[in-house]
Every structure is written in structure tokens, then in C-alpha cells.
Image 1 (cartoon, rainbow, N blue to C red):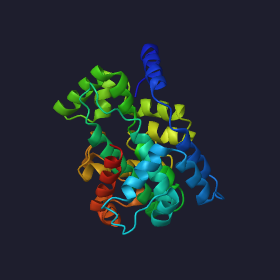
Image 2: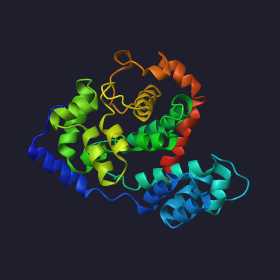
Image 3: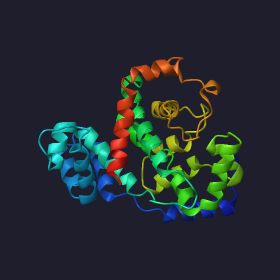
Image 4: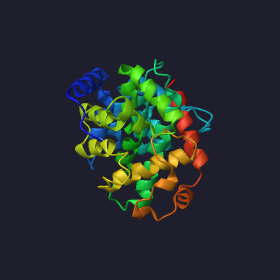
Length: 286
């Protein structure tokens, strides 16, 4: 990607500055989980102080999807049934959903975008567990997957006319969306997304991972970046294409995953469950 103009840089900074702050409750949850001595009860206390997120978590766990015989009425009970990492990821997901616009002038399919992000997040976490040999934190990989395309939301909100043109070009000329964005806007969503997560005070490593997620191997600096890259492609192959990647034929797997992406997908187990999990999360956010 070439240098952006000073004028575009100012427009992007203004757009990012107008985005909502990331909920303090979830930032506190992320802060606590970086401490290996953190106790589950400490996370429960923080989550329960956010009534919106609490309601959404309880909505999912009490849905027919989980089929529990007894009604769950607290976050503490949710942790008992689902585990603290699942509840934490739910809280992060619902916080993110709360920032998404309900409608937009760009003609962007927010629901499809959301499904792609949730599926990519879950797969990135699973890949970290199976392939990263403790080189990448699975929960950080989940966050990277969830937030990697959030720059598109910035464009939807504050540059809808140009983003709409990029969407149309991507479709009619069969281009990856990030390429069309550079041609129409002058910067792709990975740059804007990295600016946003920097505003939200995520780690430098997370910022770089999101910034480089369309570099197609040029910036494979660590296991988290590789897990995100592969998860993004697998989400595409499962039918949730963000128009962000080149086709699988033009892309080689990072070495840690072998040389066959279909074999990697097999190691994930029931991919229908991954998709159904994403649907449950997205519906709870409505």
C-alpha cells in the first residue's frame, strides 16, 4: 500500500475519532484476563455491572440451542455451564455488536459481515489451540478475528458513498474488497481498523495484526497473525466470504498448517456448529 495523502489521513483520523468508545466493562475484562492469577469471580463481577451484555449472555445460554433444563439467571451460573473463556468471548462479542449500525447508506450487509467476523474469531481461537503451540494466546486470536474487519464499519458510518463505490467495484470486477478500497478511497479497511483498535487501547501486537491481515504473507511475523490469516480464508471457504481475500489457488498456507487447507478444516471438527454458534451470538445482539 502506498502513502496516503495528508488530506485523507485527516479524514480517516476524524472518522475514527467519531466512532464510539469500546465499553469500559469489556476493556476491564480483557485487562483482568491478562493476569494469570485472575479469578473467575473477578470477571463475573465486572460483566454483571454491564446490564446490556449480561442480558444478552443470559439470552443465549437460555435459548433452545443449549437446551438447559433449568433457567440460568446469573453470569456466575453461566460460567459454571459454559466456562469463563466462553463467557468472556460472549461479552466481547456483544460489546462489539453494540457498536454496529442498525442501518447504513452504503448498502453494506451488516449481518453477513457480522457472521464472517464471528466465524473467523472462533476459528482463529481454535487454530491457536491446535497449531500455535502456545506461541499465540487463543483468546487474543479470538479478538483479532472479531475485530479484523472493523475498518469497514468506519467506512460504512462516515464514508458511505466512497465505500459503496468500492463494494460495487469489488463485485463487478471480481476484486478483493481491500484492493477496491485502495483504488476508490486511497486506503483499505485494515489501515482504518488498526487506527480504531489503537484508539480502543489494544496492544501494539493486536494493532499490527489487524493492520497487516491482508498482506498475504508479507508480514507473517507471529502465530497470531497466521491464525487470523488462515481463519479468514476458512471462513470464506465455509461460505462467509468478506470479499477480503484472493482465491485459495493464489495463496499458500503458513508452514505450521501443512499444505492443505481442507485438512486443516477437518481438524476443526463440526463446522456447522461453528456457524450455528455465530448465528446464536448475532441473534442475541439484535
